Length: 371
Image 1: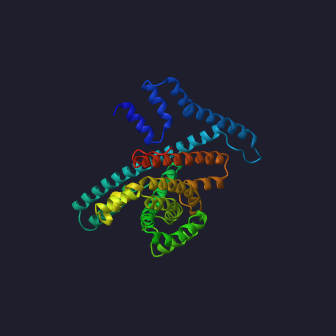
Image 2 (image 1 turned 90 degrees about the vertical axis):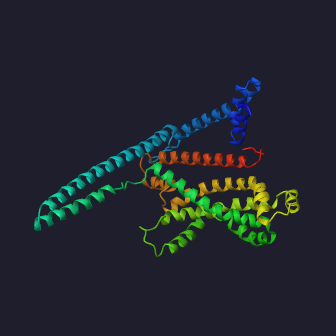
């Protein structure tokens, strides 16, 4: 395959049709037609974005009260730059504190060795005092060497924590939804048994699921010391809420995908006398992957949307908690920081969507759906 075909396939698989006109233009195809494509996929969105920023600026100058003002694009950008600068400063301070503690540990260790030498050269009570001093310095060196900065999480830390939380919840939901969906699709009887649960629980809000998830987590951690727990209660409560809200699209789409496998494929499996597991892994799952990934794409979007509310209510140190804490702070830059976090949440959601589109197209065997 030549470079043109490879790049066009890349555009198709990644769901980025805006790059296609540039590839075709570089390949020497009809210039007028490609310019129309560039105008449609690049120029028009840029104009729309500039118009939105203009209306946003006008709204920021208009929506002003005695105590608050709608932050404009420049204030939002400045707040974002400050948040990332605060993260950089915090990391530098943590690194310097760690280096100071490491130097302190080395110094204590050298003193401990000095006292041990003096203890070996002395005798009686003097040796005991030197030995005791060496032990104290070794303990101090050990504490200093294991020093870990305990600074408050920065904006970037909270973004990373949100990503970990939604990934944990999404994988948990996927591990439950796909096997259940396969069984529902393969067995009409099992599907009939599950349908009432799906129809009842699917529309439930995350605000309703969160207290129930919290009760289960609190019960599970009732005999566990918080210092010994691998995950915090707030993290598990947020992740469980994400799972409970995001498993339904994957479950429904997997059921539909498995149930709608072409009958000819199943007849071929019957003729070849494939076993149940061979039919499942060689026929049914590959044929239902496109719909399954379509469900996963929706589930991930739902999970990311739910996570913000779950973080707010569970006080899990993620983006939702950042928004809530910043709102409660009420400083002059609070609303600009909240607006910037809204933009970050949207951009991360867009990246998630692009990744899932790419994965779905990779398993669609050339039948890529429009994005």
